[in-house]
Image: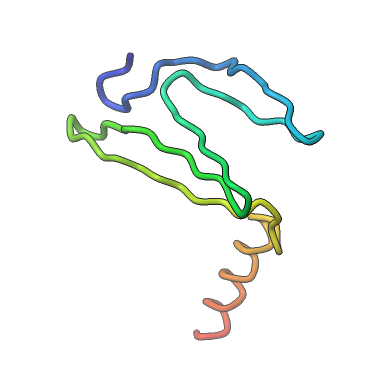
Length: 80
């Protein structure tokens, strides 16, 4: 394990298929799903400090991450 990032250097995760959707599974991360969403949990190390990271994702998204980033950039540009 990389002591700075907490990453196990696993570049090829297991891929599980559920409801015709691919779910990647890494050894250093837990993935939990319920009827409305799923979330991931992991511990990251940055500069020797441990951080518990929990990320939430809706089961059915309203926009892609790219769409959301473009909207954020456009909103910031309009404020200038």
